Length: 410
Ligand SMILES: Nc1nc2c(c(=O)[nH]1)N[C@H]1C(S)=C(S)[C@@H](COP(=O)(O)O)O[C@H]1N2
Ligand SMILES: [Mo]
Image (cartoon, rainbow, N blue to C red; front, side):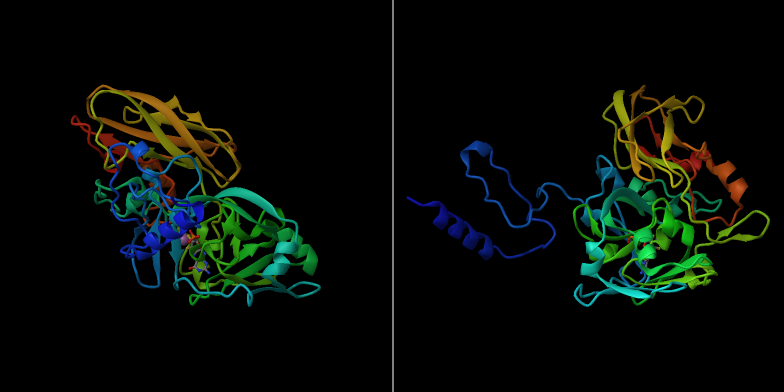
């Protein structure tokens, strides 16, 4: 006879005695032939994914200036599980004690103020589902610069510097009201507390419009990689400007021309000029399935699935072509279609067993359309790198093997 208590104790002891081989994944599980004949495992303080599922970010570099990408091809819906949110940082992830954290807002204000984390949380809170996309996302779709790009790449390898979360925090306008931003203020510097001391200047209007100071992500405190304890959220704008580990906002009447808005994160134009402060992310859609390394089992029905977003507001439509861009059909958009959020689109496709090139094209509510790579490059110039929102294509060969088809569009 065992009672509940001793059973819990015993199983806890059993768990404790299992050597911790891998902190991320449980040891390769073995499933009993009939799960109804074996007592299941007890609940735990913190849950883990099924040991049968391997969901991992793609880590590009392990030194301080590095990135990890979301495995977009393995996910469903629009929310990125927090432990798979892409990371981009220029000086590593700092460790910040929330009890010693403070956000200073000063400069062209009536009352410079320092807010502790507790104080920030006392202000009226708001939650919003937003995407964050690095403006360098999609580098793999263009890195060839005339030379062919790699074809054996996953959707995450191409466009995985893109993730979506529900963010919670306080509107920056609320804090601007608290400090009394002066009328002549035009820009504000946002500065991070990491070793890169990342800083960007943002127009004050964005601060009064929809910028947020966020401390939570998908219900839990921000992950360290996302800026724990506090980051700036600029709905629809390039990832780089959304300063993580935010420690200071300096309100000013001019931009600060920081490193990340002069030598980096600027866009070369066809006429040799450079565009600075190109904040808003253009409409974009990407197919996440079927993509490499999928092999279609044979001719027949598939559902083409993907993600679409725009920094200008709402996605109006996503069209899909399965014949190399000749005919386009409207994909279904999964409700709710959120402004500056991410939309899941789906469309059935009957594969006839012949080689095919398929792609998606997003249009937003302002009428901005995702362009073919050639048109995109002609508009932007050959040196273009950031904000590559051009159409992405995937191809399937007669054996059903799916690979990145961007070279066919060039
Ligand atoms: N303090 C600080 N903020 C930062 C960065 C950084 O290196 N330091 N990287 C920026 C870049 S380039 C991007 S794309 C986004 C990425 O946000 P994420 O890591 O939460 O996905 O954070 C931005 N904010
Ligand atoms: Mo970025």
